Length: 122
Image (spheres, rainbow, N blue to C red):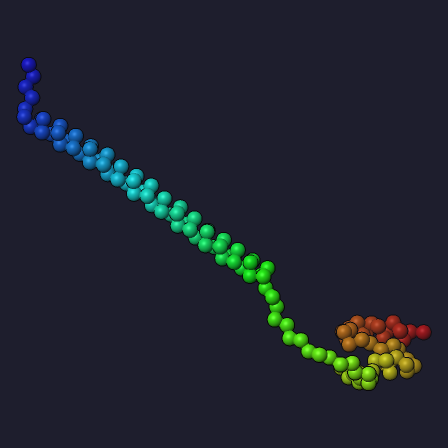
């Protein structure tokens, strides 16, 4: 028969405990991971819920908004009005004079030279 020393049985028991600890550690890590994923999903759902509720409140406020309008009793004014507009009549006065037509202010000096050369030739 084979002789098995007493120490061998102790070693096998220690290995069994070590593998049991590994299983426990793995189970513990999986449980912590599952709980953390669940917590993250609940937090995301809560955030989405409050964001949608805030958007719904804004839309409801827009729908029920009553603008504050000031009213005033007006009376008809039958007298003519004088209107002062900015600008001058210099360009129309220039056009009435004989010679080349007036050059608009938006034209550059190069295009002005081309324009006047083209008009001056008989």
